[in-house]
Image (cartoon, rainbow, N blue to C red; front, side, top):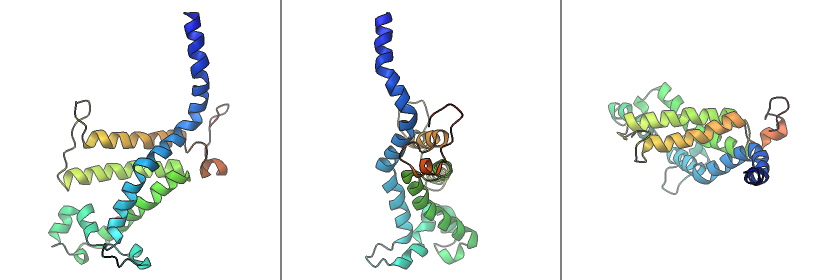
Length: 188
């Protein structure tokens, strides 16, 4: 038994030492590989007209479909006319659209990662709420045998929680700026 324990420690002690700083980096890489384009494409649908006539100023205007994506019932009640939506809807639409670009970018480059991850948690919660209440999505249930919306979004949020707790890890701007603050005696 002692040999087995010694072998276990010999194999996994280095893994454990590296894990503390590699896990956040891996979380950021997995995010970049799986969700970065999803969010950037989603933001793009809100500003590009998809007619091949995009210009630099399209970044500062929203397509009417933005309101259908974000506020489906209110947009229907406004007769699908963005001008009837009101300033508050405009502010939320712009903020949500730019958040889909900025927050993922901050996570990938590792700048203000904890705040960006908190923002993405809130974003995913609101996104899920709109998908269920506005678009008729079925949330599903945790701990059943099917993989549904709630399962998917819980996995997404878990990755963000790792970043909130651990910070950006190695190879990040946060580390260069000293934003990965660890308790005394603990390496980040």
